[in-house]
Amino acid sequence: MRQVMILVLVMLLIGTDFCHRDTEPTEIEIVIVKAPNKEPRNPYQEEYEKLLYPTVRISSSCGVGSGVVISSTQIYILTAAHVVEDQSIVDIELFDLTSITATVVITDTVRDLALLKPTGLISYSAQLAPRNYTPYIFTPVYTVGCSLGLTPRPSQGIISVVAKDHWEVSSPILPGNSGGPVYDARTYEVIGIAVWVKTYQGQLITTMAGIITIQDIYTFLDQVKN
Image 1: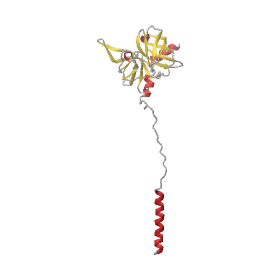
Image 2 (image 1 turned 120 degrees about the horizontal axis):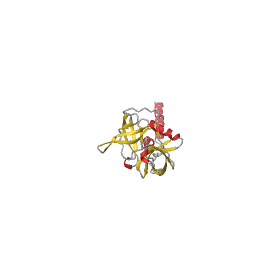
Image 3 (image 1 turned 90 degrees about the vertical axis):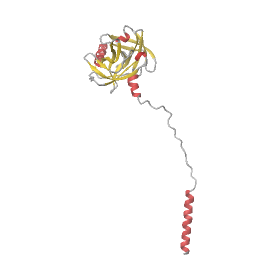
Image 4 (image 1 turned 180 degrees about the vertical axis):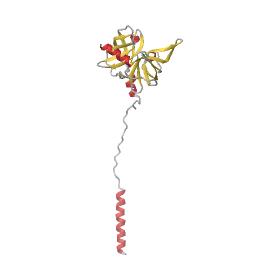
């Protein structure tokens, strides 16, 4: 009996020791982690850079139009011939509102295309669709241009007519859009240049617009090289 009491006493002492150890205060290091103070990324940043940034505003005594920066061995601006008419130097406004000038290299009044050489540095350029690009009615497109002479803005539509010498798109085109790029909305590649809209009883039908095709653009650029 005495042995049992001694054993119980020992167990109580051991248990008390463990309890004592469990309640001993321990040092806890608290680290405060702060989230990086950054603005959320624009979910459409890719569209901005590929569609809007290469689009420029062209100003001259002829008025205001649009153009698109393209790159081959050098940086050029592609636009409509009627935007620059007989001007030799025009003013260019870039996406970041930087103003530069550009020299008119060549115009083709038959195809209504013109090529300009900018005097300043331009960091963004558009990608031309392949020469063998095949248009289909209902292909989704974005038309980008300086509508009413404002900063570049996009409109959405489809290819609505495929003719031998031109295509038509349903994306709204307003005065000031002339010379601006038309993109395939799936690839963000330039498939044409906006040049005209239809009228009915003196009213602009902004959703019935004609564009110079990518094939004519390549023919024009080949003409420049030669």
